[in-house]
Amino acid sequence: MIMTRHFLTLLDLSTEELRQLMARAAELKAIHASGKLHESLRGRILAMVFEKSSTRTRMSFEAGMAQLGGHAIFLSPRDTQLGRGEPIEDTARVLSRMADVIMIRTYEHEKIERFAEYAQVPVINALTDMYHPCQLLADIQTYFEQRGDIQGKTVAWIGDGNNMCHSYINAARRFDFELRIAAPRGYHPDARILADAGEHAALVDNPVEAARGAELVVTDVWASMGQEEEQAKRARAFADYQVNADIMAAADPQALFMHCLPAHRGEEVAADVIDGPQSVVWDEAENRLHAQKALLEFLLL
Image (cartoon, rainbow, N blue to C red; front, side):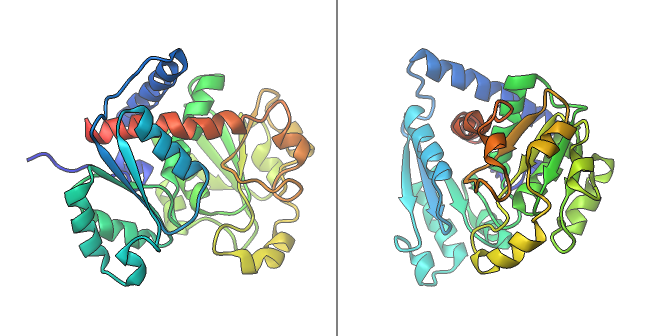
């Protein structure tokens, strides 16, 4: 009996598997650019369960399945019995009978873990409050494209110790780079996740020190979905954590800037950084499409 593989965090795949996936993402991007038809998932169905709204996640998964010859079905809380209190276990069992793979974007990470426990097909984490592994696939693919291997490099995470930060910590473990995290007191990443990374990740006192000599600088919004009521409080706490020209000047001269988007210019990032020559955010956004196509093939073929 073949064991069903899930992708709930980057740690669900080995370093070798992740590197193979990155290589395949590059191949799929080249195939798409050439205009060749590549329908490796013809007849396959992806169920997309959204409890959190999205632009890039829905577009990249839906377009990706179409390009691979498959079909994606969008399900919001209004479209499913989950929104009316059906047990997660029951929804997982039913969708497994009708779809070949299930993508979920939700709040509590425990919810997707429970869903995967009862699903009979692969389950993909398209974002929870704790992790955002699909975005990291796109980020690492983008770095590989622009600068080559990220192994041994230094990455600066500046801002909230959130789901993206947690996924960067896991990426540092799998791809063997050093992650420096500058976050205000009270907004540090989960202590257990950080401790498990050992020497691959560490907290740094201030953003300039985190960025010093770094080959990649990354940030995210100060208030994520569900935290809108904290916006004013967070704006005060993060006031000194904007990625601006001074931060980028401390980094390596060839450093790249990444942001998972949507971005708030003038808050977590200055406009002249995100719109400047070191920013690769648009390539990063596009690579959600290609990296996730590689992931879908990995889980289904």
